[in-house]
Image (cartoon, rainbow, N blue to C red; front, side, top):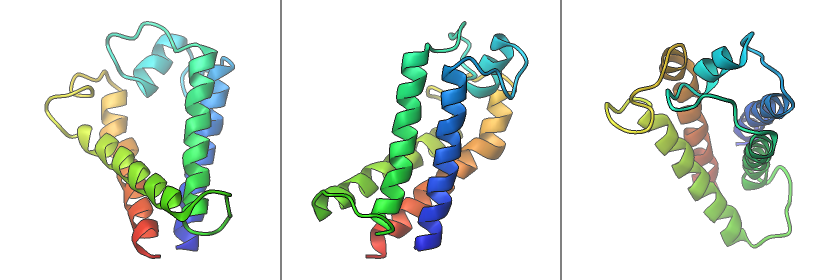
Length: 143
C-alpha cells in the first residue's frame, strides 16, 4: 500500500507541476498554444488555454489528490477524522474511475476529441487514470 500511495502521489505531483507550468505560459509538450490545446485538452470548442487562475487551481486540486493518496495509506497524518480519509478515498476512486471510463464511451464529453488528444487519451492518459483509480481503491480497502 505504501508503494501504491508513493506511485500515485508521484504521478499526481508531476502532473500538478506540469499544470503550474501551463498556468505560467509553458507550451510543452507542444510548440504553440493551438497545438497544446489539441494535445492536452482536445476539445473542438476550446480556442485558448484556460487562464492562469483556473490552471493553478486545477494544479492545486491534483496535488491535493496526491496528498490524499499518502494520507489514505497512512504515509502522512492529517488532522482530520478517519471517516474523512475514507470519504476522500471513495470520492477520488470514483472521480478517477469515471474520468478513465468516459474516454472509451461513444457519447459524452470526450467522444468528439481532437487528435492527437484522442489517441493520447485512449492509449496513455485513460489507462493511467484507471490505474490511479484502482490504486485508490486498493488503499481504501486495505485498511
